[in-house]
Amino acid sequence: MLIREAASEDWPAIWPFFHAIVSAGETLTYPLDLAREDAEGWWFVPAPSRVVVAVDEAGTVLGTAKMNRNHMGNGSHIASATYLVDPAHSGRGVGRALCQSSVDWARAEGYRAMQFNAVVETNTRAVKLYQSIGFDVIGTLPEGFNHPTEGYVGIHIMHKAL
Image 1 (cartoon, rainbow, N blue to C red):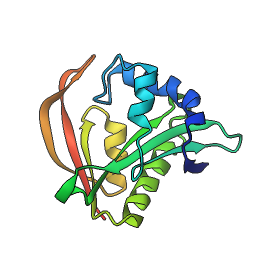
Image 2 (cartoon, one colour):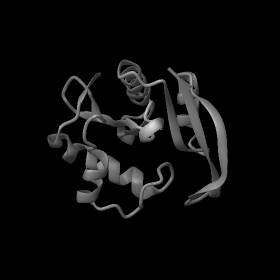
Image 3 (spheres, rainbow, N blue to C red):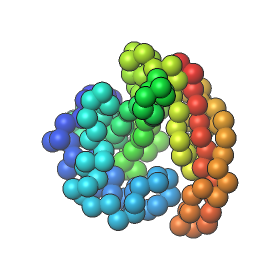
C-alpha cells in the first residue's frame, strides 16, 4: 500500500465510498445529503492542510485522509484528521496506515498534539484503532450524535501528544 498526495483526479474514486459513509450517518458529523460538488470542496482543503489517498499496487484508491489544523490563532499548534476507508477494503490496515501517516505528518509539521473532536462512541473499531496508536479519550459529549439506529450516543474527544 502506498500513501500519496491526493489529486482532483482521485475524486471520482473517493466519491462513491465518501457518499456511502456520509449518507449512512453512523460515523461523521457531515450533512447526510452532502452533494458531490460540495463534498469535494469539503474534502480537498487547501494548504497548509493535506489530503492523501492510500492506493494498492494497481492504483486502486483504498481510503483517504484529510489532515488540518484543529484550531486557528493561538490554538493552531493542534492538528486534526479525518479518515475514510472504502468498506470494500476494510480490515486490511488501511485505516491504521492513514492514521499513522497523519500522526507522522503532524509531527513533521511541528504540531504539538492531535485532537479528534467527534469520534462517535459506537464506532468502536475506530476508537480501538486510535487508542492503539496512542490517542486517549479525554472527554465525551453525552448524546452528542444522533445515530440512525442507536439513537443519541456520545461523541468522544480524543487526544495524542506529539
